[in-house]
Image 1 (cartoon, rainbow, N blue to C red):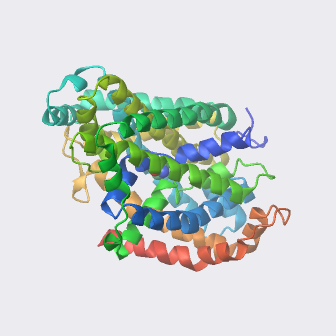
Image 2: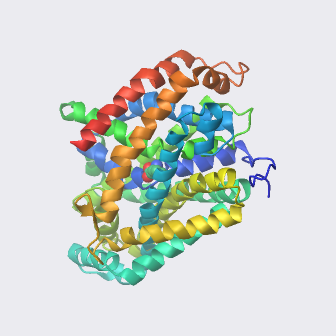
Length: 448
Ligand code: PHE
């Protein structure tokens, strides 16, 4: 295996398509499916969608391009990238990203375990529960059962290790090439089913009817926060994935494709969720409650319920798995480049470390009373990462690419001048001023 940090050649993506699907796999996660539809429905439907698109394509895409460029210019992990391009105190930014990736994975994989367990539960008691209350009890009992959640978390984490252990081309890319088309197919099947339910139109109307009266400053901040999280920015993932991109790849075009795919999945998820919950008059919330309680309750009333439910959890499972793989690769790439460990050694050691660190998150949902910042451990960690660490890292990445190594970045995105990029100068100013200022507002708001 190449690229094990012992002076052999660095691994690369095998194909353009494979790289796109891997990057899209990172971006498409629980945030697309259980958060985006709800935030959109709450914030004025199509009115929010327009603002979200503006945030994704102006600011989100700019930061993504900066991360890919930093990665490809340095061909290093997130820490090594900053050291190679500039040095000084800048590698701290890479460290921050690395730590965030480690922390997020430790609880993201816990939820990944839940999705995996629920694929199987779809065929057992879940679908024969009489009422929404029963479904809720099943969920609360499940996440409070230490044996079941730890076992599911362990299996999920083991799958992440198995994928990453095989390498960039042979592992991550190969799996994403199968899993991502699978995800799209499941999404389309669920959407067709949802849209053909009686009363679906009402759900679609709630989701998309433009209501500009709901658009405020807070809406714009929500849109930007969601864009940032959804595109997996600010934690070294795209720097790491960027470091495996070949030199003749067109970076701006790659960014456009990945951004488009991510947005498409988020948009279509809303067309699954709202028609489904509206058809059965269930309250649509966000997050775990929607996915593990409201939707199973609805599926249980549908003909073929177990199949719909299993398909939905398979969708969540794939979304969570490919995102987790990208988080893990940040850590592995660091161990290989900087500690000179082999990929195998890095995978087993770090996989174990993350599993152990994730145990409090796994147990903090009813099994034990473990708190962080006055919240359950899992929620506290999520709050810390999303509101503080990831955003801070995002600002620093923008400033670095915009001001510190600006010329190097311009060369990188144009392939040394070989591929002119029409938006070069707006891009630079977004990185230098617009994005950092906008992200500061998100942080301020999150701390309030
Ligand atoms: N982008 C993923 C989503 O939308 C979330 C994620 C964040 C994944 C950070 C990996 C790392 O759910």
